[in-house]
Length: 448
Image (cartoon, rainbow, N blue to C red; front, side, top):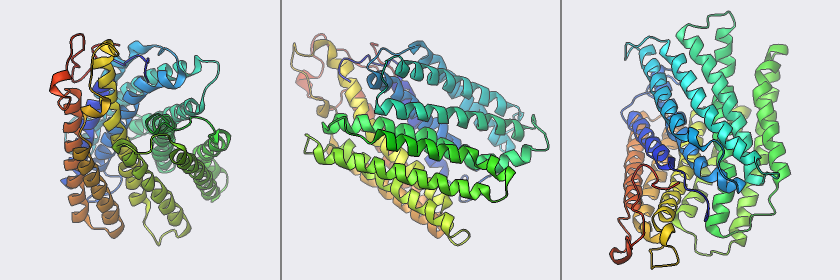
C-alpha cells in the first residue's frame, strides 16, 4: 500500500457498514427475526440484508476501493463512481428494508418499493464492480488475489440478479406460474452465491494480500490453479443445480454434493497456503489483527463441516442455520473486523503523515491503536459468536439473544477504538500532528 492512492470514500463505507452491523446485532438481541421467527419471515429478511448488504457488502466495497489499485498495481478506473454508488446503496438498502417491514405488517409502504430498492442496489454494486474489474484488468497480468476478486465480482452479479427477481415476486410485479418455483429453487442459490461466492471468495482473495503484507510473508508459491478450478467448479454446480433438478428429479442433490466437494478442496488449498505463509513469515510476533483474522478461519472450517454433516444426515441434524451464522458472523465478520482494526489506522497513518514522512518524527502505525484494549473486544466478540452458534445448535433462543448483545458490546467497543485511531487519539502528544501533517476527517479522506 505505500505509494497507493488513498480512496476518499473508504471511511464513509466503513462507517455506514459498522452502523448496519450494530443495528442487525441489536435486532437479533431484541428477538427480531430468526430464531424467534421463521427463517423466511420478513423480519428475518431485514436482519439478513442488514448483515449481507449493509455490513458485509459495504465493508467489502469500501475495502476494495482502497485495495483493488494495490492488487492491480494500477490507478483506479472510474474512481468517481464511489460516492454516487454509496448513495445508491444506502437508499437501495433503506428501500428494501422498508419493503420487508411492510411485507410483515410493520410499515405501510407500497411493496413496489422493493424492486425500486433492488434497482438502486444493482446500480450501485454494478458501478463499483465495473470500476474494480476495469482496474484489475488494466494490467496485462492479473495476479492471484486479483483473479479471486474477479470471481467474487461475478458471483455478486449473479446474487444481484436473483435478488432483483425475488423482489419482483414478493412485491407482486412478477406473478407468473413459475414464480413460486423460482423462490423455492433460487433462494438457496441466492444465499450461497452471496455468502460463498461474493463474500467468501472476495475475502479469500483480499486476505492473501493482507496476510502477506502484515506478516511480511512471501507473495508467491500459491496453489492458484487448484484453488480457482475448485472455486469455479463449486460455483458452477451451485448455479446449475436448479436446472439439473428441472431435468431430472434428484439431480440437484448430486450437484450440491459436487459443489460441496469442490469447495472443500478449495478450503484445503486456502488453509494450506495460509499455513505456509504463517510458517515462512518474517514478522515473528503477529499483530492483533492477524491473530484475530487467523482465528476467524476456524469458523470457516467449522461451517463447512456442519454443512457436509447436514447433507449426509438429512433430517437428523439441523446444522444449516448454525453453519450460516458461523460463516457470516464468525468467518466473514470476524475477518472483516480484524482487518478493519489494521486498515483504518494504516490508511489514517498514510493520510496524516504521508506528506511529512522522512522529514520529521512521526508516530508508528502501531501507535494509533492500543492492542491491549482491542484484544479484549475481539475476545468478547468471538465469545459471543461461539455462544450464538451453540445456541442455534441447541435451539436456545434466550442464549442466542444474550450472545447477540455480547457481540453488540464488542463491536461497539471496536468501533470506538477505530474512531480513536482515526482521530489520532492514541498518538504520542509531542509528535501527534507535526507541521505539514494532515488532520484526518472522521468519515472521508482529505487527500486522494
